[in-house]
Every structure is written in C-alpha cells, then in structure tokens.
Length: 370
Image (cartoon, rainbow, N blue to C red; front, side):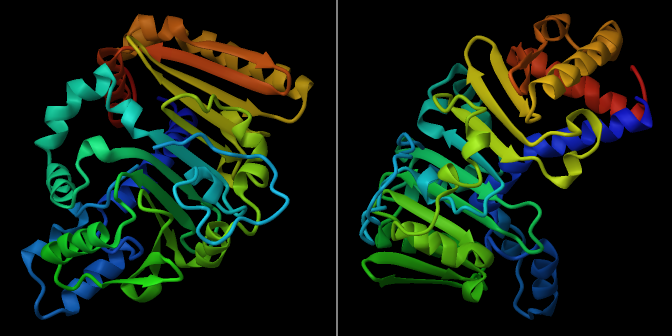
C-alpha cells in the first residue's frame, strides 16, 4: 500500500475506533482518569503492588442504552433531580466535538452479538461481566452507553453516560467500587450522597461520577466536571442543540450505534479534507451496514468531493480481490453527493468483515497483496 494511502487509512481507522476506545476506557480502566504512564509510575513506587494491580484494567463499570434524546426547547431550567433517567445524550455538554451512542439492549439482541456472546464471556473481559452480575447489573439490565469527548482539548475531556437498571443506586455503585479495590487495593473511590444524588470521587477528583436517577450514571473527567454538573441541573447548553446539532443531523438516531462529530485538525488532509462535520450509523441485520455522511458545507464542494472519491475508488476497485477483500463488500460501496454532504454506504457479513480486516492488516504490514 503506498505510504500516503496507508497514512490516510490509519487516520480513518483511528477516527472510526476513537469512540469505541473511549467507551472501553470507562468500561475497563480501574482509575478511569489516570493515564497508563501514571499507573505504571504509581505501581513502581508502591511497595505493595501486586499482580492483581496489573489486572485492574479489566475491572467493570457497567454500560448502558437509549431513551430517545429530547431536544425540545425548555423555557425554564429543569429542577436538579429532573435530569434523572432522562436521555443521556441531553447531558453531553456544549464543549463536545464527538459523540458515540450505543443501544446495548438492542445490540445484544442481534445475531451478531449472540454469535459472539460465548467468546466475549470467556475472554479476559468476561470477569467484568461476572463482577457486574455480582453487583445486580447483569447484561439484561444494560441499556445504553453514550461517550462524548473533545479530542482537540489539551487534557482529557471525556464524558461517559451509562443507563442500566440500578446503575445509579448507591448500593450498586459501592459494589462496583469494591470490585475495583479487589483488583487493585490502591484504587481510590469515594462514594457518598450529595444534593439528592450519589457522587463518586475517583483518584482524588481526577474523575467524577454522578447518578442521574436510579438507572443512570454519568462519569466525567475533571475538565468537563462543572459543565456536566450544569447539565445534570438542567442548566447550560446541551451539545444536541449546540456544538453537535449539525453533526447529529447526519446520522440515523434510530440505529443501534451511531457516531457524530465536528471535523478535527487531523481530518484536514486526505479523503476528508475540507470537511466540517461527519456522522456514521451502523445497522445490524443479515448484513452489517455502515452509512457515513461527511458535510462540506456547500453542494458544489460536496459534488466535487464525491466525484473525486468515487474516481479514486473505481481506480482501486479492481485491485480488491488481489488484497483478499471480498467482492460482495466491494460491490456494496456507494459514494454519492446529497446536498452539502458526501455519503458513503457499504455492507458486509461478519465473515466478510473478518476477511477484510485480515487482508488490510496483512497489506499494512507487508506493503501489498498477500
């Protein structure tokens, strides 16, 4: 694969994987807010560090799914407790530049998940499922997870909201904290009740978690703490009517998984050069479908970009078989201009995706077809 094309591909992969990676930070990282280097330094300095501390990254924080976001204008701010159990997307602050929403209850009902369920439960992540089950948060209780961030911020600016039956109760949160401490005795979780909600202080305030009703928990890094507290009180501006209003028009919010965001500096070159906003929706049926929309703010720019991308795609389409990419996946690709956006749609079976990942990874490491 040519060096420039490989760099563009790697940027695209990072863009698609970012929300997933962020959500895994909250699901599996014991200190949540601590960077890995700080964890290693702390372990080196601790005379009582144990092998269990190294496994702490597999501790559990339950995930969660959607009530439909409510974006109607409010003339009066909601009272402090009114945000409880409301759509998590409404709690994302205006500073957010990207958001990912996963409807776990719907996703876990798909053939894709059911086919992988045993593998997941038998993987290293399986201990998280067992821990959640011990804290009254077995998989059937999980509903939605919403992860938002500002990847351009100088320090970690992240919010993860989880909806699961009972995830916001003090009893279950204390149970979760106990599971962290079992994995890493140095885990610093302080659970208390303040102003009618459960508040968790993690690592001295580097991360905070707040209940928003019995069935919702919101975790937030220090830079966004004040803004998320405002949203929990029904104050401030939500991203759905602010920073992410336009990006969210590019996705189908009825889908089980969708991602929307503002184009960031690393998208200034390559296929997305000139983009303003982007969105992607995933559908899970017999074939897994990905529909991506990239806004260029102008119909003529979008038309020119669609022509450019389609010409490039047609130029390499015939090479796909040589790289081991299934022809059915290649034939499913459609690139079009619609108003001020460029849409890219494709679909594949699980087997075709696995084959494609294997082929692309092989090409990246060998520089060409296998």
